[in-house]
Image (cartoon, rainbow over all chains, first blue to last red):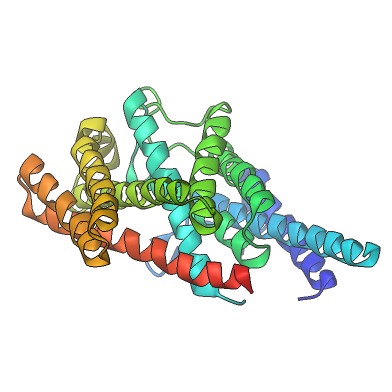
Length: 82
Length: 244
């Protein structure tokens, strides 16, 4: 994947992940009904902690994306200096 | 996406060893350990380690980053998630200082697996193999105990109060005695079959004598074989990739 796509992935997952992770349950619920609150998925009731876990996973993806971008930049500059 | 399977196994090994070390510390110092807590920790740490391993690579810098980042994400989860255990009865590792402990344990787990892959010193390789395979077997055994209690119908607070260090003491001794004796017998007899036989059968025998449970000893046999398979498989795949 190109550097640009890693950046886009990092920003999107970072924004969505931070929203579920850091914004309070009350605010998320009042913002929209489609944000998976009090919904049954395959017989499992989606709880607040499940959304926090999803947010954490998205933040992990975001961090790894930016780390990848950093590595791509440092590898490129190392090759140029050679 | 080259070499997905071996990197996946490497991440499983690091996650399992970190969790085993963490569980032993918590049980030894009177902090609660229960299935939901371990499941979340395994998920967060496994995903962090696997994604770094898969998309960035395996190395010293990646090890340091994974050791700091994984416990930090777990801490973030704990800060924002709601409590499921009664905190007046059970002590959980949600204070900030546990982040440093988790980072150290994560570093031990990562660099044991890393040294087993790339160290040129045979003794260091053997020590790292004992740490990785031994603690991985203990992690599987602890999960087996917790799942068995859950299937038996124990709620998470009862299971947390039942799970003490004494429940893991005999398996811990059995796995380390088995794996160390296995390495010594393989070195002495110069045949791999002796090593595999002793490593797998000795822990099962010790657990059967210590606990008088045939099911637990059968699972011990499976766990130690699975751990050795994981360790040798990721080594086989990743060392070849490293040398390319």
